Image: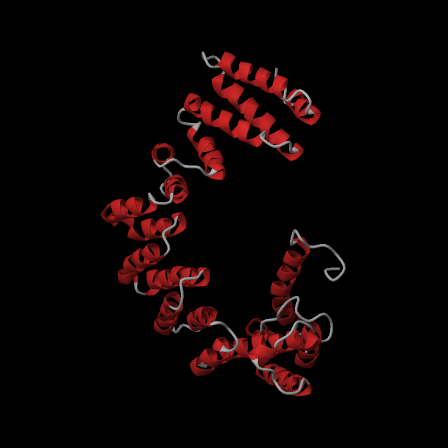
Length: 346
């Protein structure tokens, strides 16, 4: 089905992955003969449409047993021999041969993990990957086999290897490893990651790791994030769960991110409903600058929210007057008028 259908939503692929996770457990419970299972694994990866999914021999080891794993290694070796000489990284192309080699190398990495062979893990996980990605997946594999100190070392290498997003992910993984296995060093690692990539998410990592010592880092973090209003507001709102602080920062720092204002106004209207009316109004006006029917239902819902927030106050009449002005200004936008009517607006 996946080969013929539009899976842009990922629903079919997600279902397939869930089945793939279940399959080795079912195979072990059903005591499928090793030879039959090996043949199926090879056919699934190399004879149908290679490249969609990988099978993990580590997961299949209980079902295959030692004899089955030996059969599987032999089958992979034979298949690789039939593919001819292994191409150099620069010679990889799209299409079946490269996908077959990808599957071969994936299995080599996972079999190295199954063998708990540190040297082989390093060799296979660095193969064909860029420096950062290779270091990171090496660290992940080493943690999987319980080599925690080595995993930390390789995660740090990945973190220091570049300034790209993959290195930032490696930094978070490095911090997580330290939190689990060397907790006394974890907070300073989070500080280092935050200094290199100042963001709301990395500030949150640092805040959670610091715990009761957060006050020692608070001024440093907030003053750093002040250069990026969106990150500062997002951290206050999602990391510190402090809508009042986020609201104050949004105004003091001149937040100009509409997406963040939308999230913030939703939180802050629980604290001071009337204070948010002006921001709601600006969001409505911005949404209507361009005729776009997909925005009209959200506009109508926001206006209904404004009426609810202002109900029983002096600002109720102002909200209704604003809606009347919009109806007049955009009287030719029939879809907008329809959505306003549907929302029960005056």
